[in-house]
Length: 288
Image 1 (cartoon, rainbow, N blue to C red):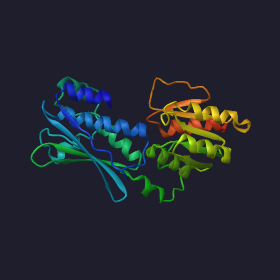
Image 2 (tube, rainbow, N blue to C red):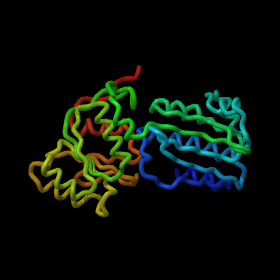
Image 3 (spheres, rainbow, N blue to C red):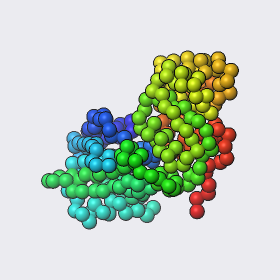
């Protein structure tokens, strides 16, 4: 996202990001969703004149979270809007690159497909007077959690199953906690317990004796060092595998942590790491 904002600044187009709001947690693969945002916002920047603006708004509407990306480029007809969602051949993509910043962006077909795979939608509408708006819709986390999910094809079709085990997740990131709860709900086999700080996590670990711990390394100033030391002083938990989650991509290894996952954490990466930590069978099967 930082590179995208730098590109917008270079094009002399301002990007207005939405204010954080409670209740705007959607069920989605963060990695896929970031690609969708990048494609949609990049297209809006390319369509805007120097000195123009791209506005991003988020809201809760019923059981969905909607993010609207609005540009102030030329008004598009319904037919023109629909062409933006059509896959481009290789020669057409090359032509788009040569035409410069005002051309249509070839990423919207892929973005729509990514959203459809996550039970979401991507729609384009003409704005009044000038510009176009692109609306990203996804199921809200709490709405999705109320629905029974008997099969595993709603979030990640190629994910088969997870081994059984008790997981302690220590984090404040509501989006990732919702993702973990969805993983447990969809694929079963796991008992999930959540703590919102390292101190609570240490107390819960002593009581639960979890099979694996997922620790947000950004949660404490010491990067979870005190928690890890406390955990390892208990003989019953010296060999308990700990997975770390970090926003810092420079962090590749931490003492006492078996594996570090970097944000945005995808469903696939999380499922595979949990399987390795729990010593279970491979969870991915070949896609047909």
